[in-house]
Image (cartoon, rainbow, N blue to C red; front, top):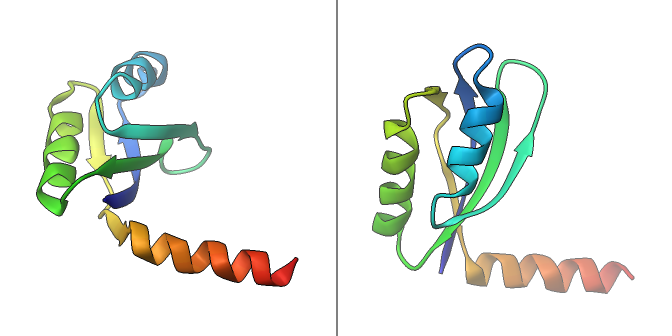
Length: 90
């Protein structure tokens, strides 16, 4: 399992429509509205890196997306180490 995180900029005044469209794409796990240069922060999950690339390509094909920042990719095992570190702090 791989996870990808990215920021997306959409056309002016199209954020509500883009939010609904992107949220409905399979593999988009979480979508957050943010303020500033970009409109959304996304967390995606897929079985392989290639599947993650397909999700990003599908997002790009929506007519409202202007820019997608490079995708940060991590694996499930990377996150397991993070969870262990967080529990050690408790």
